[in-house]
Length: 146
Ligand SMILES: [Zn+2]
Image (cartoon, rainbow, N blue to C red; front, side):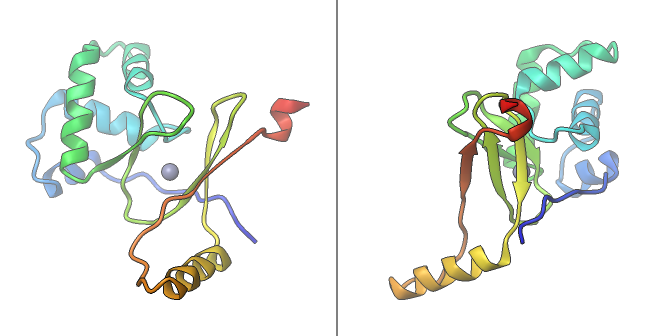
């Protein structure tokens, strides 16, 4: 049975330092948004809007720049799903796959041991040792379709 993952927030300051980044206000704020967001797959614009909502004025260009720095530092992963704009999520070191609602754009995560075992088998049959995989399912969530 596949189950959706949940995760616990980390400490933004500690994470910046561990990633070798100087602690600056924009970095701290943006990391906080990423760590506390209920929907943790966010576009740069989502981050920008979340900052505005808490009266933090950080320009969209800065948000992009910081997210790219985070990506380079290994703090976040950038996804380019078919649904459109790039989405960023914290890289917590777990490997998981994604399912996306093509009507609402909602992104959920899942992990499935049987699927992963099967992928290793397939790779093995083809003469590979599996190192990584990326699976994105596209569907319509029943609550959206109702
Ligand atoms: Zn994810």
